[in-house]
Amino acid sequence: MPAAAPAPDPAFLELALDLARRARPSPNPPVGAVVVRDGRVVGRGFHPAAGRPHAEVLALAEAGGRARGADLYVTLEPCNHHGRTPPCTAAILAAGVRRVFYGVEDPDPRVPGGGARFLRRRGVPAVCLRSAAAAELIAPFEKFARTGLPFVTLKIAASLDGRIAARTGRSRWITGPAAREAVQRMRAAHDAVLVGLGTVRLDDPRLTVRLPRADRISPPPVRVVLAGGDDLPPHARLLRPARGPLPAPETWIVGPATPTTARLADADHVRRIGLPAGRNGLVPERRVLAELARRGITSVLVEGGGRVFTRFLAAGLADRVALFLAPRLLGGPAERGFFLTEGVAEPGLATGLELLRVERYGDDVLWVGRSRPVRRG
Image (spheres, rainbow, N blue to C red):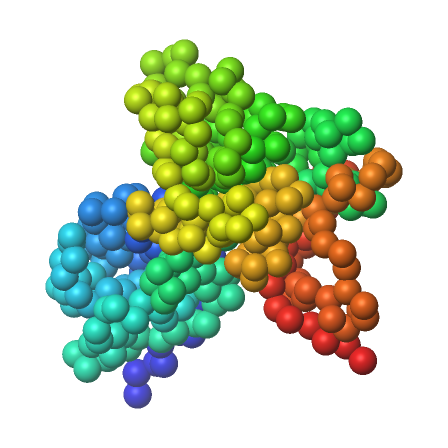
């Protein structure tokens, strides 16, 4: 009687997830894959960019003939449709893979037929490992595919008393170097970084990704400014042309047309996106997100300030909250907080957040959660 095949090893899926985190193929989901034969990895791959070969194809190509009779671990269910590239299921069958283990099912309702079902019908066992990490990795893709809107993460750096700036408005630096490096990686994982006009005026940020050469991404995230009906400072760093050999990241100014934004429309890296304002003089957040999605943005990292955080939270449009807490007390007026509402009458009516994970960066703590209504009592 032949020996039973070994059970799947979650460590190999973790390797595939590490590979997937190096990918940024938007609007496609990040995917990593490894080919395992006799307990050893013989092929690796991740999906580098839309239109390029998928992770499974690259991993199988590296494995070559060693893929026959091997196991394939992939973070997302293999595709079974023709897009810019052929279906991965065809490559899996041609390579003679013995079994396929995948982290999470393909959530895209626009894609007919499941790759796993296709493989099973052709004699290749395909098993979903139900990985929470794999599901979180493709959450932006899933939201975009299901709703047509970008996935929104609020990145907040605050003191223990909830202040995101000193009484003067200055916020450099509340958190330490390790936390700020983590923010750079967050930026690299998103299609766009968004701030309000107040943040541009007070902090004059660059909103660029500053990582070692080996970790740099292309293209960098688009920089988006919610300008309302006011003008941007004409000398803001977001508007300056590049000084080095690389072009400046694109800057999109979203809001009603103003004299300054109209003049900037002809700059190489600056684009004005005119949208009608609501009764409060601001463009509704959902309309902003719909316009960004129309232009190919599937994920947005919102970096401030307090009024912008509040607008997205109050509108129920924040999918994730990444809150860095620094061990310091800034005091000062409540307007320097990140949730500027009149407050609720009862704690049970609070805006709820579900904890996903907690990480430490030096002396700072990162709390990551997702929106969820909470009622207590």
